[in-house]
Length: 132
Image (tube, rainbow, N blue to C red):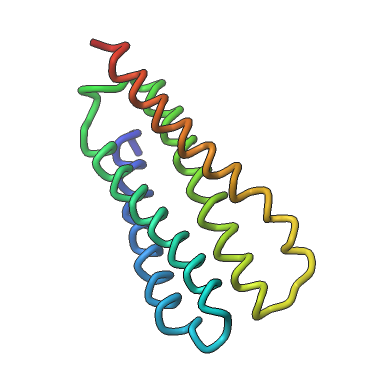
């Protein structure tokens, strides 16, 4: 599978999951957790969907703006950022239902994921200027 197809495929999976998680957060969680936890869950969903769309555009752009190496770096930064940021929020909110103590260690992954997303954005901007 070529790099652009992999990015588009990943973006579509993340987008589909973001819609599913958004629906679950809006309808399935409201009777299980606090309104603050539902809001946190929705934040994770918004960031996931936004970055899925960004990855989709990124994958569809071909190789016109970024080199193959730059695309690989951005893909990894944004994918891990999404999984750490949104994934940790989802699990931490759901831990209010499950009460699994071992999930608490995920707390530091949220800001780390956010940092990776930010780094990805700055790297994308820098890379786009560098190539032209």
